Image 1 (cartoon, rainbow, N blue to C red):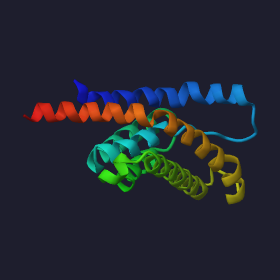
Image 2 (tube, helix red, strand yellow):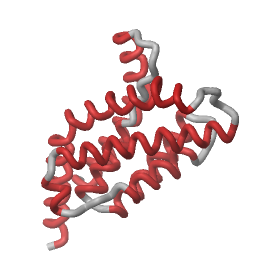
Image 3 (cartoon, helix red, strand yellow):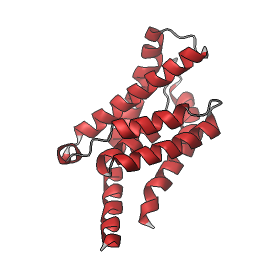
Length: 174
């Protein structure tokens, strides 16, 4: 049963990220910048760090595809992006796992990477008309700050959840 905890958390964050957070942040802060919640990316990176590359790749692909179907009109952008981030940013060494700052920095770099990946795709499709400077100032910086705060607040609970899942998996293997 515990092997489904991470997937259930990601499903909850998928709904939370797409429905509640954008409206609450826009109504609360009333800023002229765009803060996009990328909580799924943060958790996928944490899964890659604490569980492994294959698990984060699989979860990234599955939840990216679900995100594409539910929230976007282009299939594959989020599926490929989340899976790629799950694969590339899965640094599961003991030194990184024991650190507090490094997983947060890796997650923030993954958010920046995904934002620019998405910007490039949308620029190629002709959907966005923002310049690179406008995009960096009005979307990337606020998004990284917002998601960095989420990563700081959730690192320890997510790490404990993943450690519990790993312990239960070890017990099942005996």
